[in-house]
Image 1 (cartoon, rainbow, N blue to C red):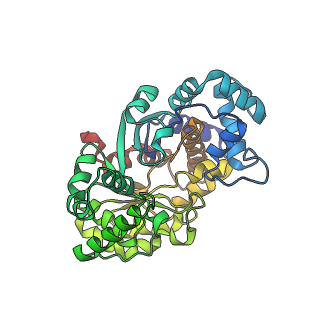
Image 2: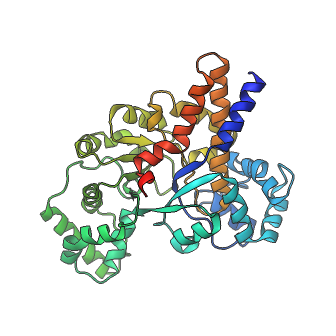
Image 3: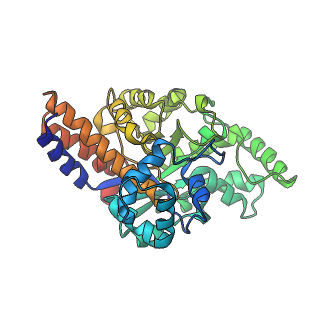
Length: 383
């Protein structure tokens, strides 16, 4: 590979402002110790056999994040954790968020929001614009806690959602976790929804937690979101062990997508690994589908370039978005950006050096994925 080409493209890609179209807040407080930090980075509450630093993610943190804490690359894990605690959560978060080069964060706030920074706090800590993405299931659960009856819930939820999402740029569903993508693609009838709501409220009255997981209600929430015409993000593919991964393949959404496409509502497939090629097929096939390979990039570490390449095989380049899907330790916000920039610049440089692309092609496509595709999908230019 031509070193000059690699250097030029790295300089351009590293300077691109990013729209992180799906991200969560950074931690409010320091992890209590190394074990607590490892739990936060692991995407699972289940212990590993050894240390989560002995993974692609752990080594990537030591390699890429250590210098931002004034340590040598690949400093050992205990030294890293000690320095992190010495600086404190606020300073660590400021350093990492600033180093992402992100120009706009689209923040999803519906998961363990008491542990992470909210919209206003992320604005303060990052100094960048932050727009909200509203989680449908959390919004339904919040509405229940206002004391409505089951009938009031069904009758009033759309108005409640509209008010909650009045300043949001998108919605999100975690039906992949709660039921799976092999759901009935048809909108449920009002009778079905009322019956399902009655069952849910009866379970809660008997002591069940406020957690919406009824298949009828889950798909009703999605169809209610479709009526708002905001982009709807769907967690798909890789996630924590609550997920049944084979039911999170986005191809299972095909019939639903076919019904939604004439309405124009954007369907955004998040993460998608190991189904990123399936997501690329859907993005190629339907006008209203876009996708990313966020989240997985962090956990793949030095192998991230391979998945970035696979995501760019069949999908039109204007259908691919950048995201970190970082939640918690701000290392994940930084790594999501750094590993994407590194993998993308290396990949594009190889194509240019092979004579298959021009440098102008490479810069144009990198810019689309970094920011302009998300600006179009979420209407950010008008916000």
